[in-house]
Length: 368
Image (cartoon, rainbow, N blue to C red; front, side, top):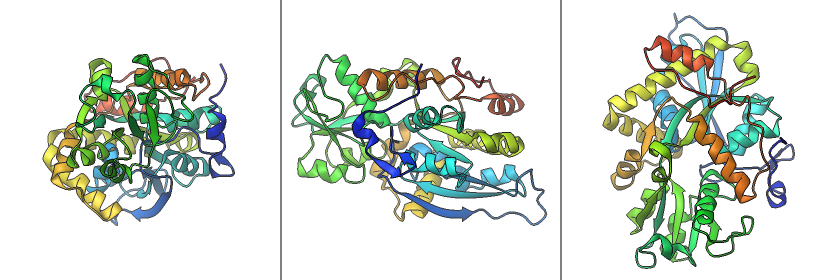
């Protein structure tokens, strides 16, 4: 099978001359912000094999494992004298570029950019080493214009970006309804309007869109403006679970510093355990981290419903990533990808076993 290749229109976009903007992420915008934030380390703490580990993530609720783990010092606790430095990104391609260039070592990222980054580099740059979150994506609509799923036909529905995770999911849903839409232009039985999540609420208020298939907290922001949830994407998946955020690592860093990678994974597993055991406190910690990263906390009417729709877990739900890739191929946004080797779950399974938890499966897509 050939490596992934997007449509011609996607190839014309670029983050840099060296990195085309391919299937994009589920976050906001296209820029990245390198905050270079460094956690405090105890003077007598023992270092692992690296002086520091650089991690990247989005200031999104679906990346709350990273937000909370950094905010509460749970990663640093596992790393001892090895310093954790963090940077935030607003889109998957810029985070993949940072991983490829060595600016970060480990990242939290959505499935589409992970797939595209892996296939674009012919499987030589990254591995998915853990899951982080499931769910948190909804189709929200203007209840005056859309009262049932059939009413979506003929309406203007926003997705975050051409070829991103939610865009692919919506195009697949449209196809399963038997409707026709040109994936590249978004025109057809439904008008798919690619709109940055930052401006989607204003577009809804102005009436330029009739709804949106978007991740949290954008979905709940629209609901706060009077929209209604027509469909929760989780209802379309077996067991109502599908990957929305993975943890990736550069293969070079994994090979040279496996002890550091396992320490970060312990921090991730223990952060998810803490989040699930203390949901209200974790929600507050995530909101505090969002305020620190973006300058603004989310109001209760937005964060409360958004938080409830996201499941934090260590399982990467590998079979659903494979299905999401199939949806992108079906939509014409991706050539059949070779995903064998995209996962290396051995470090995570060692951590899970030591924690007395069940090991997870790579759906046959493990490292060769």
